[in-house]
Length: 359
Image (cartoon, rainbow, N blue to C red; front, side, top):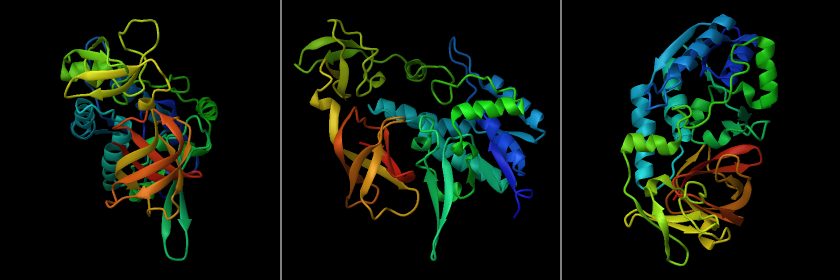
């Protein structure tokens, strides 16, 4: 089918990346429809939610491009699938990544399914990533590839997207750098051309995670901060607020910086050390659960991994366990602050194999 007949629903967030995505696809000849996903509209004390401004910006871009515009209201599902998951993980003492869950459950499941039922042939978003079809005599394999702009590459957040969704997804920005996208926005005359990057939690704008957790879960029970010599060196405001490797936000005196090395949720203790080389902060093996493979499980066990967004790629070897949803990774070097609840993503060259949750 020619591009002139293919209908593409673009997730228009009101930002520059999704705006340029829609403009590029229209220029390429697709029948483009812009869709704003209303995932969160709740104001927090002193921190109004920016959704109305984002919605208006998305609508203005659609008007500029002369494309149809819709809004899908996913607030109820977002609360259940993303926010409740995130809160439960923090309460369990882990550090989740809500952006990854948002992509898995909302953008490339709920939005994808709704758009296809609504008449779309394909969907598109402003993610910095690439998708290609790899053909051989027996099968058609979908591959998720890292973006051209290594600094903006967002495949870390996309590893849990299903192969069936990727088969009908376009990522037009995968071959561009961020500065090139800004130039394109100005070339197209888009109202979002100079709009600042959105920061903070994926759904609440500029709200910090601690403020959000306090608002949702209330003040937490204070407890002891204990150093590597088993000395109590201070008090924390709630163990859920701290993550492995964290330095800032520790109200501990003494002059030297302290780093979080662990937590005991039952005893309500946060463990710290002034030694950046403390063994508790470094690991050369990782236990991974809830593993998701984008296509087939690899036969080549030599991989590279990323343990957080923008972290450097580290070489490792896969060790498959008795259960297919769990693996062990033996790393070729020690990695700092490997954190339970966070994701680890597996790569071979530019290809994203999949990933899982660190435990």
